[in-house]
Amino acid sequence: MIRQLRTVLSAEWQGQYTSFLVWTGLYGVLQGLAVTLLVPVARSLQAADWAGAWMWIGALAVTAVACSIAHYVQAMGGFAVALAALRSMHLRIGDHLVTLPLGWFTGRTGSIAQIASKGTLSVGVVAAHLLTPVIIGITAPVTVILALLFFDWRLGLALLACVPVIVWVARVASRLIASSEQATHQAEVAVNDRVLEFARCQPVLRASGRSHDPGGYQPLNQAITIHNHAARRALWESVAGSSLNGFTVQAVFSLVVILAATLALGGTLTGIDLLALLAVTSRFTGPLTDVADYSGLLRSSRAELDRIQQIMDAAPLPEPADPVPVNEPGAVALEQVGFSYEPGTPVLDDVSFTVAPRTMTALVGPSGSGKTTISRLIARFWDTDRGTVRVGGVDVRDQTSEALMAQLALVFQDVYIFDDTLRANIRMGDPAAGDDQIDRAAELAGVTEIVERLPDGWDTRVGEAGSGLSGGERQRVSIARALLKRAPIVLLDEATAALDPENQRYVQASLGSLRGRATLLVIAHQLSTVVAADQIIVLDEHGRIVETGPHHDLITRPDGRYAAFWNQRSHALGWRLLPTAPDDLSEPPEIGAKHTR
Image 1 (cartoon, rainbow, N blue to C red):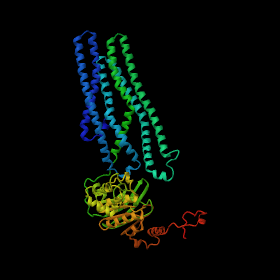
Image 2: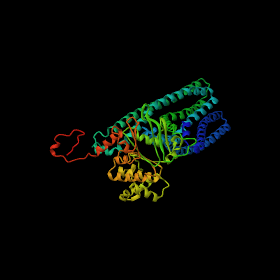
Image 3: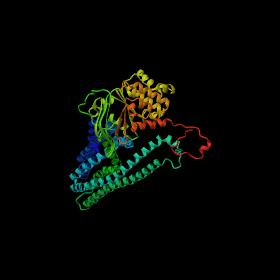
């Protein structure tokens, strides 16, 4: 644990941590030394050697003062290290997370939240409160054993022989606690996930009349029940482990008492030596008992350190040692790209296409055909399994993440809006932009119209995840970010999906302002967006490109995938709700039936 805690501290705190360890170790040695000085004091008093007694009492007083100083210094150092550990862990975890591929985060959101909150706090508690008894639990007993070997080698050897037993029992108890701790952690993560899900899905639950079910939200109830069982098991196993440790330490003390009493009865140990040596022996068992009492917390904290280290050990996306400069600004190309999220389940298969600078390309295909995956690979959220992705004429793996993202503006369907003002959210596109530039981007994206309706205008906070805005309004903010960034390449993933006509109008106007000065790669099902593209790429359900070309070419292929897509979407535009006579409602129509009246 001592080495693990050092790994989470930043370089500037390594010296402070070493100083804390030294002072804590010295504190433990002085504790053991102080109690061992009782033996020469007692022997001097028994022999009526008053000068010797006062000398040893003086040594004991000096040791006690030194022990107090060491205690103060190490306590203050422990608190400083705890605060440094909390600050370092949050910063280092955050800095490392932004370097990891997005695929790493799948299924880990709840665990990350648990580690960043409870886990880091648990590690801080170790430095502030638990590391001191652990170190004293080593240094004080070692000092006592060395002193006993000097004063009475028989008792010293007896304690030394018991050390392997104590260590073995401690390991058994630690393993016992570890198994239940891991189960408890997983249950806590599941509860966190379900609580967040329960909060986020309130509109769905209320719309379906499930928000006030007598039995509550069953997935959350089940997660809480599992957590309760895991917590009870962890409690019993922690008590069992602590009891096993405590019993072993007390058994060792009892054996030493029996041995000392036998020696005293045999005449080889005086009564005053017996009392003094038993007092020294109690200082051997005391720190070990403290460690046994803290064994559950120590094991839990060590597990949190292990989980933090697992995050820090996760391999980031590799950065090139010698980045290659862009030689064709605005160009995008995929060359024989293959990719899968799960081994053996390909999402893209031998995908190759080129997007010329300042042109518009539309990706079309059924759900699951890999359209969104292509946009993520261009942004290098993942690396390809095979093949090459080029942005600006250079392989994305030969560019730094900063240089790559400087060329891209991303507009996705699942827009995230921060709990801040609209101006601050748009400024995410270019932190150095002035208010006049933000106003211009907002006007083009239709955000100005939103601002005029908000109670505090630009200074209105839009709530967590933009809860104060509609889906279409959040999309407009995302478009404004892209406009403000002025990147040479813009990736739009379903940017106009599920938008009402007013929001579609603003988004289409924004696309028009982007076209001609930036390369557009659009994933869309809106016919007006697709038709306007210079190039249309059609993928099938297996993630393969089956057709490529402009609209006027692809539409003439009667058996082509694009022609089928066009006919299907055009046919869907003719659907509408019509008034129906009461007699027509006596029998429900078949699913998919179309009224023509």
